[in-house]
Length: 108
Image (cartoon, rainbow, N blue to C red; front, top):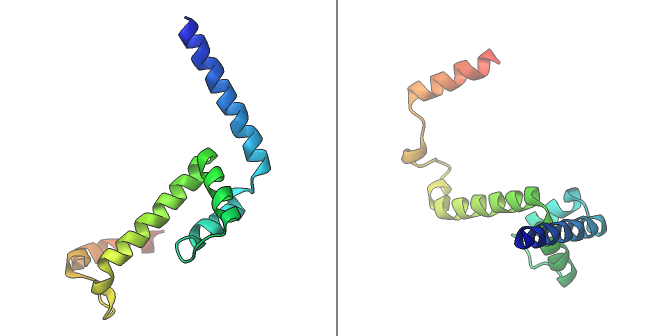
């Protein structure tokens, strides 16, 4: 019983610290462009600290940053396929799939 009570108290403290921190950090709308820029340039110390603190408390921005990293890695991994402007055969759609997509999009 005591251990459950301690865990409840710890969780409440973490939650209150998170709320206090969230009030002092910039909103997601300001952090998202910095996260994107971090892929292209080295962030300043202040930018790094603010974004890392924001990522600690914001699951949505963590997910957004993970998606950015995934897309960057995928583009690097497949860049040689797109150098001549053509998609790789493995990802090309079959004519049947293209027709299904065209029908589905025209129905909307």
